Amino acid sequence: MFGINGYELIVLAILAVAVLGPERLPEYASQLARLVRELRRMATGAREQLREEVGPEIDEVDWRKLDPRQYDPRRIIKEALLDDIEEAVRPAPRQGTSGHPVRTPAAAGPAAAAVATGAAAAVQTSPPPVQRIERLAAGETAPFDVEAT
Image (cartoon, rainbow, N blue to C red; front, side, top):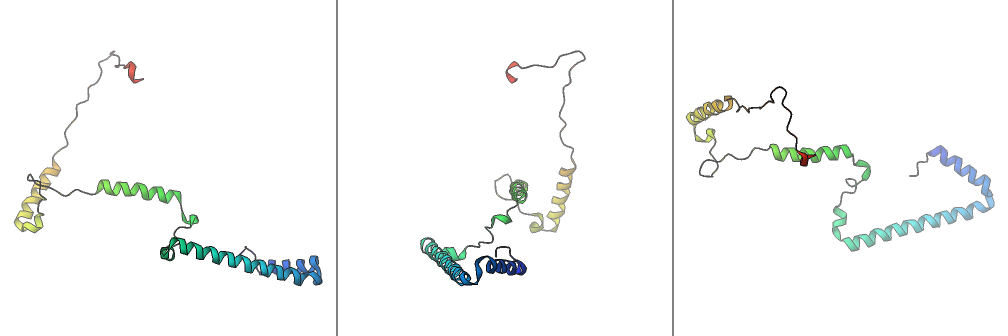
C-alpha cells in the first residue's frame, strides 16, 4: 500500500520496539489502530455523501478509465488528428443531376455495371488540367507589394 515490502515492515517494527520500548508500544499501537479506523470512517462517509449528491450514476463510472496515469498526450493528439482526417476522407454519396443519390451499378444489373465501370475508367485516366506558370523575363525584377510586408 505504501510501497513497503515485508522486510521493510519487519525492520520498522523492530525499530519501533527499540525506540518506543515495550512499555509504550501497546499504547501507540492502539492510537494507530484508532487513527486507521477514523480514516476509514471518514472515507466511507465521503463516499456515501458523494453517492447521495451525485445519485446512482456514480456507480456506473469507470474510474480506471479516468486515471490520469493512462493519458498519453501523443496518443490523444494522434486520435484527435485522425478523427478529423477520417471525416475529411470519407467519400460523399454520389448524386445525379436531379440531386438524388445515384444507384450503384451492381444494383442496376451486370450490363449497366460494365458500362459504368468502363465510363469510370475513362474518367479516371484523363490527365489533370495543366496550370500555366508565368516566369519572369531575364533581368526583370519581381513584383513588390509595400502593404504585404
